[in-house]
Image 1 (cartoon, helix red, strand yellow):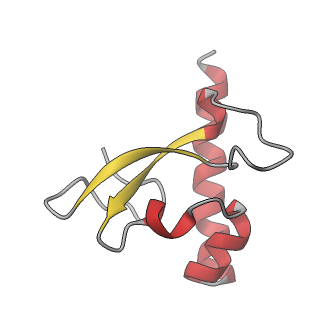
Image 2: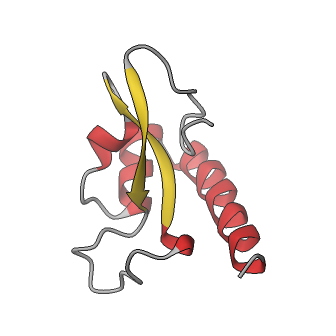
Length: 87
């Protein structure tokens, strides 16, 4: 019940939106499948607002810097591994 990136919970100034981790416009996008959908906060300073159609790693690095981006990416990849196991 929180943003997969910044861990912000749903609150007054923003909601959670289902986001395509790899944008639909990307050549390597697997589509609207569980292993490509994550919750991102949307609204005032929301992660979904700034990510838009950006490549995930490029966006993470620009928003958080390389070290924190790697930590977040590891958490997201771990989440997707769990999702894959539930298929």
